[in-house]
Image 1 (spheres, one colour):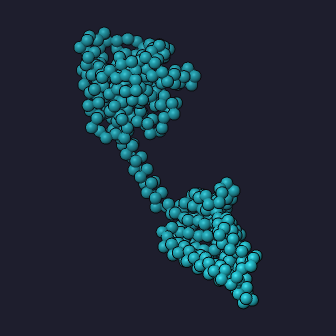
Image 2: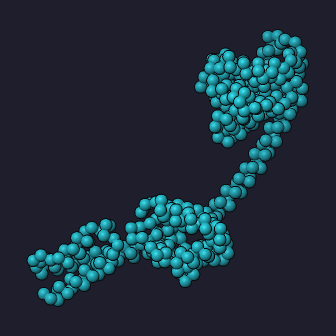
Image 3: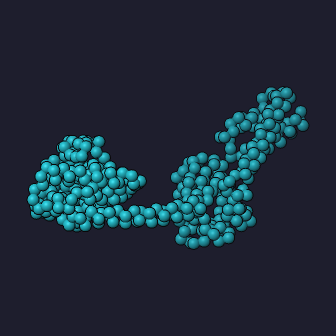
Length: 386
């Protein structure tokens, strides 16, 4: 019996050593420990059963530890474990491959921060972010944070840290190398920038072709584009949509290329046939642009910029939400610029009259929200057509 009690005490000691700091996670094991420590008329069979159960738990934990090590060593991502005092307990092989540092190089976080962030200012930023995250996040919550890490070979890599704090105070960290991805993204952005510049140049060439045929409306498309872009920005639209509105504005009268020059520059009132040719320009412009694969709905904006909210516009008498937002913005900008500027058949009416026109027809012909934004640009924010 004494030998059995001695064996029981050894098991208790072993279990306490293994499960130190993990009582909340292993309540069944702790109950067994308590039961061993405070036996109440326990016979030999009961002791033997508990010892067998405890042995299974110990073996299970050892198997789990072995499985973890296999998974960690096969992981495509670097992995490390740090104890509550900042000492590194584990680095997988991928960590050593990516960063070049071994346990001898970085026995603790102090050496890691010194080597990985040699710039003192950046090191302070990294430390501040690390401690801020430790305080902010609870146990078992993933803390993603990106840092520029200097490797042992001197190369700088962009690394996404995913850190998890455990109840025993240890930190489990995985690292994802974003360097190649970021480089590819930068190259893509450079290519897109060049393509955008080339597209802008092509659109500008088209706009100049139209304006060369109509001296009186030279600059009209550019001014409309600028006003429409500013309205869109004030409305909080994305930069992507704003770019599309500006591009469409620059060529919104492209269809006038099919209108005879003498009609465009006629100083008197247009007759019905002449006005019919003018009214066809949105459809003509759409026909030219519809096959071009723009990243924005440029062709639709051009087609709809003379439509009106109450269905009184042209060419398809669309109304309300059937008119896309970009075209509704363009409609207001187009009317304001046209009325404020000189035309062959009349002198400039000025901004005051243009704002009066859109205000009187707000909610009927023109989108009320867009009218309100446009009016505030001129009356409160000092916008000038130029």
